Amino acid sequence: MRTIEERVAYLEGAMENLPSRMDRLEQRMDRLEQRMDRLEQRMDMLSARIDMVIARMDTHFRWLVILFVTVVLSIITMIANLILTLFHR
Image 1 (spheres, helix red, strand yellow):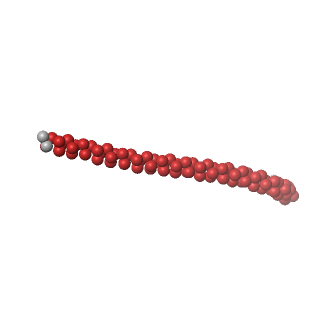
Image 2 (cartoon, one colour):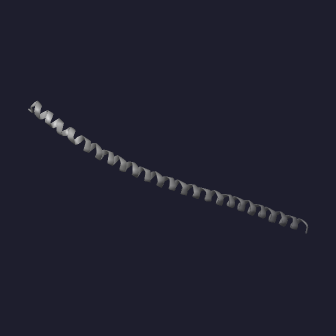
Image 3 (cartoon, helix red, strand yellow):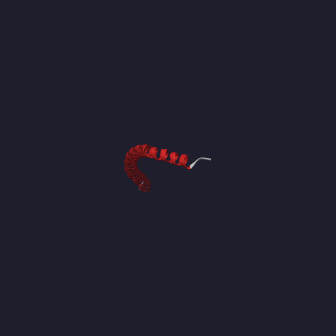
């Protein structure tokens, strides 16, 4: 069994190491915060790129709908002209 003096000496030694351990912990936390900031910047850039792709897809979709409607109207017009031509003969 340890004596009281040995226990107090152990605690004093632990207390002497505490500031350096706290400094190392603070440095690690600073590095972690920097890494998190870089990750957040990357995520923001990725989000901006995704928004650009979505905007492009939206534009392409609109053009496809316009093209589809134009083709359908052209086909309807051609069929109507064909029917009118057959009835006028």
